[in-house]
Image (cartoon, rainbow over all chains, first blue to last red; front, side, top):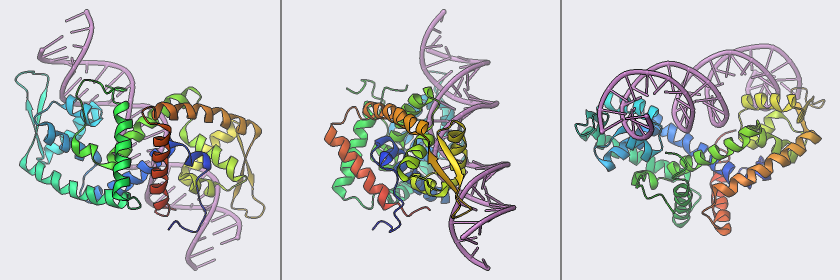
Amino acid sequence: MPPATDNLAPARLRATPSWLLTHTATHANRLVAERFGEMGVRRYHYALLAAVEEFGPASQADLGRRCGIDRSDVVAALNELAEAGLVVRTPDPADRRRNSVTITDAGAAWLRHIAAALADVQDALLAPLSAAERDQLTRLLVRVLDHHAGDRD
Amino acid sequence: MPPATDNLAPARLRATPSWLLTHTATHANRLVAERFGEMGVRRYHYALLAAVEEFGPASQADLGRRCGIDRSDVVAALNELAEAGLVVRTPDPADRRRNSVTITDAGAAWLRHIAAALADVQDALLAPLSAAERDQLTRLLVRVLDHHAGDRD
DNA sequence: CCTATATCAGGGGAACTGACATAC
DNA sequence: CGTATGTCAGTTACCCTGATATAG
């Protein structure tokens, strides 16, 4: 039940989807950061590991596009993942501008590990929603996201 | 229709609500920042103006709690709003620790002005959703937000 | 020539932390 | 006394811009 203290946000904000989104995202990020922080992981690490696993040897530019992470930030995050032995950078012989990024066995294992932690966080985040409502929320967000897919890149 | 280029995000991410939320929020913030930027406004300005209008003369701490803005950041944002003549800070005689913050006529007019711009942005953001779906999304987000209302403060 | 890639340097807004003086 | 308020200094992760060297 909501706390008795009537510290509600202004009606204008509560009726503004962009405000609701950023505020809910802030709560989500706090939960994720707490859980990931204990493991020395940041969001970018998870996103990139997931992308490298799913899209196999891929260029850094492609990984960044798929995850919505800037190329600059991909460099820094991959440095850390490579240093930890979770991914490997190999020059691509077919296009010598590119690095072919591959996930290691340790990387795949670590991905499963942090994915389990992330699943716990989703549960805590969406606690007040039924399974059907969680699906509904997910589908609505995907629709919005896909609509804006071409806005950048 | 989604762009033909199959640059989709990893399935793991597309099925993770916290990732969908932060990513959608990023798009929303970009749209808001573009529109607000032309007017020299940031999100905090809008939130605080809305709170001061709705909750009348209020303390800075209360405004911050209601908007989910840290007290430190309330100080800085109110400095800018006061300098622009949109709000007025008066020492509260009943509790001399507090500032009583009031919206000015110019502030109320400016609030209506930027609220109209914000409404346009909501429309662009949620373009792919029907009116019923926008309501659904809004209600789901409010439920999640209210559930985590006591997490901080 | 123009575009794409990887990298680096750096900026900016937002969320947050810690400290402090003051007042309840 | 402990707690709340307003203020300030500084930190961090994230998002983004611009520049460069190199390769297509």
